[in-house]
Image (cartoon, rainbow, N blue to C red; front, side, top):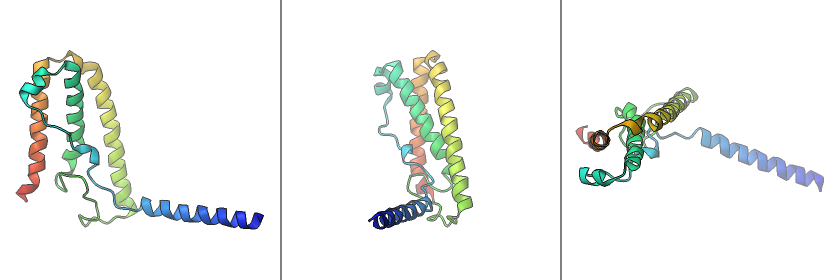
Amino acid sequence: MKTKLFFLSFCFMLVSGIGVAQKKNQPKSIISDGVAIKKYHSKAELDRMAKGELLVLYVERIESLVKLLPYIAFATKPGVTMSTLGIPNDSDNRKALDDQFDATKEYLESNAEFQKRILPYSDTNDLVSAIIFYEETLKSLHQYSEFH
């Protein structure tokens, strides 16, 4: 009985280890799913918002741009992987992409902390203008693929 239990446990660990190893080697999307924003706003909508809401939108737009801009030579929407671009999906390239994602995440965390501390001192009209600019930039990046 103990032998069967040990054998079944061993088989389970072996199968789950293989499953994890296969997922680790799967091609990753170059652009994360968190790039897309839910809604674009008009100036009138933004003018009616409280400053706290504007601060959140401002930081979200920066995050989207930072996650998208470095990769526009490859793609402007999530779902494109190194493999679909013909880039070898080897361990060195996956590590380089993971390192880039980690560096981006670290930068965004640092930036968000800075923005939370400093941005409340900004003028509301300047916030509205910046959000509109960022949203127009994001719209144009999604149209960028049409230029190919």
